[in-house]
Length: 436
Figure 1 (cartoon, rainbow, N blue to C red):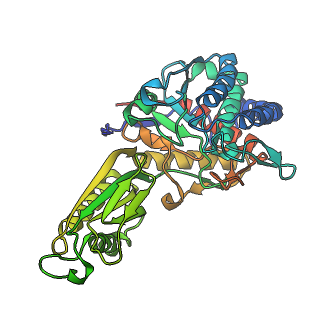
Figure 2: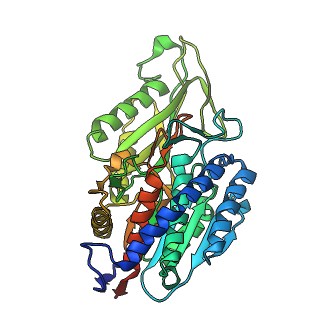
Figure 3: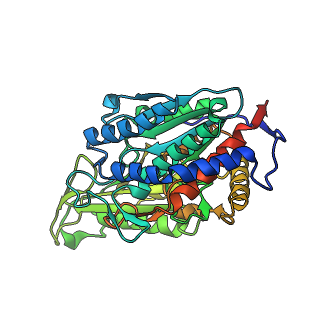
């Protein structure tokens, strides 16, 4: 997907409050969060016990209906969109139009990595505060934090004045195809908004938020050589064969690019031999060969992660050049799937949001907050706001550990803390105006 950069607006803060302490409205927000935290944990428990693996469309929609009901109560206009055009369950989109001012896009997702055949299907309590459950941190906990924060803003009497759009996607863990349709609501929401706030888990530490995420793009290396008896390898007529050439290319990728900060490129699988058959879903395949035959074919599939589009372009150019410098009697072709996740590049606006959030956390007595190292932040839906909003951060959701494993946990003590931080951040952002 091609993302077009837009010019930044000048943000001016209306001096109706001091960041040094909570004002009357913000104290109401805190009180409301405290009053509804227990009910929010009940909501979270109900949500995590619904299987919503990405390909379990019925379960994803059931979780969407659960959260839609809560947002309907708060006065949002809600809809569950159809995912049929891109082969998924669809998304939950909720909109609240308030007075002119900064518009906020809140991002969550309904699906998990745990499909119906997973052994991990229900919640248990490890102790009085740690819940072990599928999707508790990634990211039904974040969805519940959004709803709890919205309720607090409503009860404090300020939600009616705010413009908020919530997009909870149904395919964050396994994007639909084409991805342009899969992420259309996210991109349109970002074009509508001024600020994007993501409620993923981040790196599991409640003292951090994400101001930059690396994007993820897949690549395929296809190599051909001359099949011949192994006794003739390295001759002028036969050359080196496909496996040697694939090895040369991968080694030079490493030598040229592995030291660049925030750039990684990983070969996920390699197949080579006389013949190669790659599975349709690109998760592996089969190869046939003999020890006394020079390999004719080799295929490598992998991904590349970069912190900005500029870094990604430079890496692609270097990799492409390496692929053209072939060993004798071999040919190679490198292709990239540009339907992956874009990066959320470091930006001044994102850093400014971190400053606001850090001050709010300290005003609440929760201590300092700092930025996550981009190497510790995987690709996520927030990145589709890149180029469309002035400010974006992620990691505002429920703190947890061991995401994507059967040991996934969430810290229930953090539900109220994260909701208070997020709600006050949104309230303060709603007091800002923008000028061209």
